[in-house]
Image (cartoon, rainbow, N blue to C red; front, top):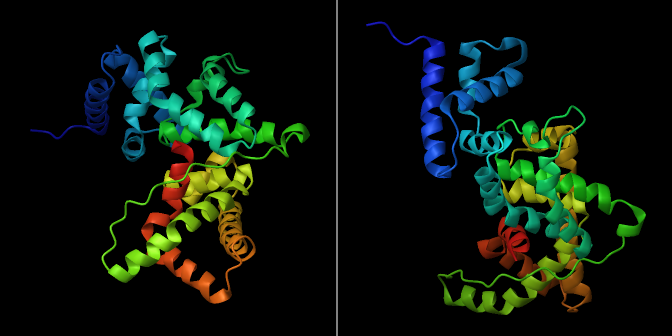
Length: 290
């Protein structure tokens, strides 16, 4: 019995991905033939001149095929699909806009208009949603769309000096093992929550967005660079700069607002280092979900 040819193997994998996505997104109708055709087109675009079955299979394994199912259904004009897109991602769009924009009114406007913006045609006449190729999670891609619009708007002179409302705090539910550590945590927790939240709010929109992708979405530096159309060293610079500003902001607030001496500040920094409750990912996630 002969083994399946590469093209047959790829078609079988697409069929399996189709069934999995269909089960996840029920009851959105989408024909297998349409899904397969659109996926093969996406793969060919990604592969470029090397668009042969052997080259397409590794690319296919890296695609977010369940996300592509929803996008393809939206592009086919399925009303249920657009409703599903809104149901799944409107909260994320809203929270991302609110996190990045210093101007709350602008954040609300961007969040309300993003899906409509994606529905409309671009310069080539195709829906902007067609630009999604499945290489990244749909959530990360949507964050990027919101962030680009937000950064463009926030960099205009009449938006730049709006203050960001205080970000929500996260209750500490971390169970500490030792009594001494528990006492220190209870003493440090409310102060650290306030100074970390305040330090995050002082970052620029671009810095917050890069941290959001890196520590909440766990995106790689190279992927963030491709999304923002800059070089990986530029993203590394943004990350180091933002992390330094966060640390400096925390130290300055402990020193200037609470008038702690250097030994006390070191104690707070040790608590910040030892207690994962105060991790950057959790703090950023709390800011976007509040």
